[in-house]
Structure formats: structure tokens, C-alpha cells
Length: 108
Image (cartoon, rainbow, N blue to C red; front, side, top):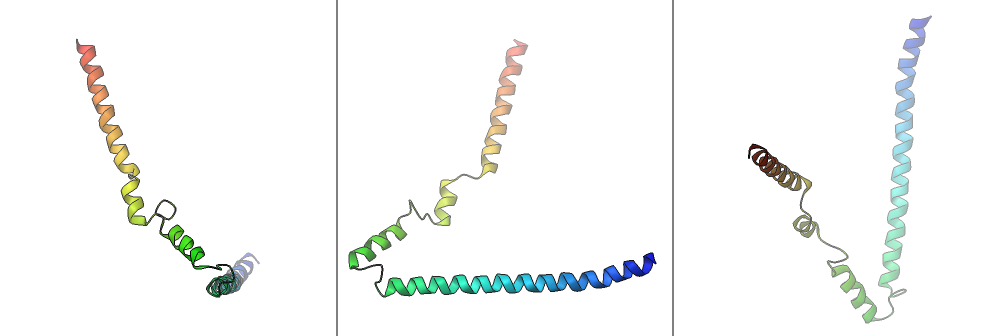
């Protein structure tokens, strides 16, 4: 009895997992399509000047998009934020120097 139950579980588990994955993929795909359509509709509304009524509004929007303080490019972020590994190396070097100073004080 145990062997047939184990075989039944193995055979049917794969079928159910496959069905669940298919349903999940279809759901994610449908949600992505709805999001894309909503975004495209919003862009079309902006292009028809439904929201942006004057050229000055577009100029303000473009300045906001180009502002690196708000939208910093990845290359600029890499230059600005030093990786943690470099900080760790510097901290280890400082710890070694402190240890040498303490050892030197103890020997005096």
C-alpha cells in the first residue's frame, strides 16, 4: 500500500505543480499587460495635453527628469557611493595601526 501511495503522489505532484506554475505565469502575464496598457494610456493623455496644458509645464517636467539630484544615473551613483568592501579594507588597516600603537606602548 505504501509503495502505490508514494508512486501516486510522485506522478500527480508533478502534474499539479505544472498546472500551478502555468496559472501563475498566466496571471503575472495578464497583470503585466494591464499595467502596460494603463501606462500607455497615461502617456497618451500627457501627449494630448490633457495634463500638461502649456509648454512651460513640459519644460518643468523635462527639467525634473534631467535633475541628477532627483534622478541620478547609475554611473554617478557608483562614483558617489563608495562600495562597502573599500570601507572594510580601510577599517582593517586602521585596526592594524591601532594594534601596533598599543603593542608599542606596552613594550615601553
